[in-house]
Length: 128
Image 1: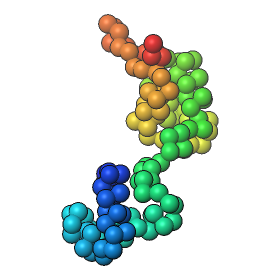
Image 2 (image 1 turned 135 degrees about the vertical axis):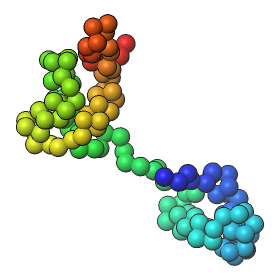
Image 3 (image 1 turned 180 degrees about the vertical axis):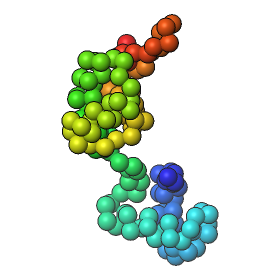
Image 4 (image 1 turned 45 degrees about the vertical axis):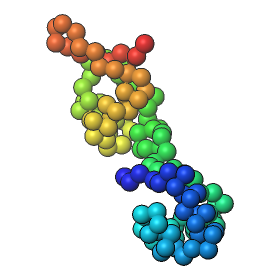
């Protein structure tokens, strides 16, 4: 995903346009594409702000967000459950298909970590 231009640069580009420059000449002066200048002016007219829009999907809006409590409860009940087993359980109980790595990321975000012990077994525990 691309990185948005800084607010300082956006303000200078818009000031150049307000000063009477064309979009193309302002783009040449600041080293940006003419389409970026056009989109910047359109954004200012539509929203009244030059600030960039938030990028990406909002946190907690994925398909597993509704099932975090179920996943955490299952891991607490069986700390030695593997991610493929948890994925199969989620499919059987809730009808939701998820990759084991996605489940691992959700559990890490919920505060669970994977702690290995000297016997080679692992258990998920909450972070301190």
